[in-house]
Image 1 (cartoon, rainbow, N blue to C red):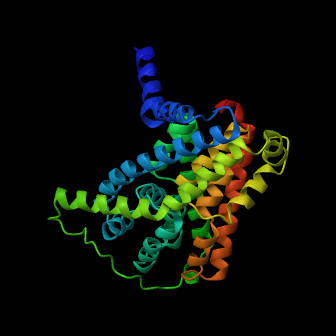
Image 2 (image 1 turned 120 degrees about the horizontal axis):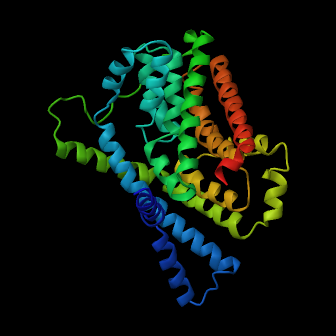
Image 3 (image 1 turned 180 degrees about the vertical axis):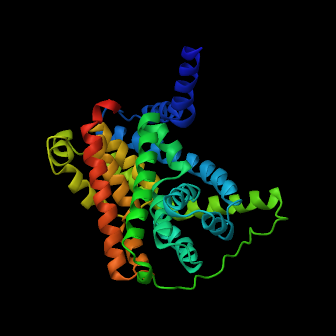
Length: 338
């Protein structure tokens, strides 16, 4: 029984999530065009086309499904749910609700503004702000398609822990007065109406999928392009020297490299895949992905408009410290993912 379940899961992960059939198909097409898949150009094209198509297809399907789920949790309802909890429980619920928002950090900030304007505790709102771009159901599925279930589940777990711990620490610092009250524009779609039909929710999900994919595809293309470059053109020795386990500063470097970039989790996955193929440690990869998604420079510029410098500095310091701790811890436990 367990053997059958394992085989079924292996097939699902490889052929459905991983789309191994697509990789083979693209490989055959490139060979038919006269390209050598073992060469740099052929290998790069196969990596680029396969990852690009796979991520965009999975992304479209996942965003559609997640947006339909999210249509049942519009901001006003989410505020009412969070208002029923207090203390650590509120931070946990806020972090979990963040997983239902398949957006980058810049898209999460308007929702964060709505929560602060509604009078929710600052720590609770920051748990949401950390979790929303860092962890979502779509990221879980895509990570499983590339790295397998243990890595994907570990990423989600540490992301939620970081969101809860970061929000709790910010709450303990007593920085409520550091939030600038800002009136966000009202949304064009009203999902609060109890008579909203399934057809309307499906239309909302379709619009969200089109809008989100339309917004993030350039970053997916850039991420896949960087991944193909790392995978086939940059020697493994170079990557190992900078980000390998032998460099005690690899996690710090990966975090510093990630912060100036702007991408969501979907754009970082192909880069992480290429780093993994070069032998970069699990913790270093996690640190890079988390730095890009949670602390990207553009999102910090946006956040500066709604929080004062002291709170912004505390947020960056707490999240960066958490990312670095997670990175070194997972590098030490890397044998679990071998």
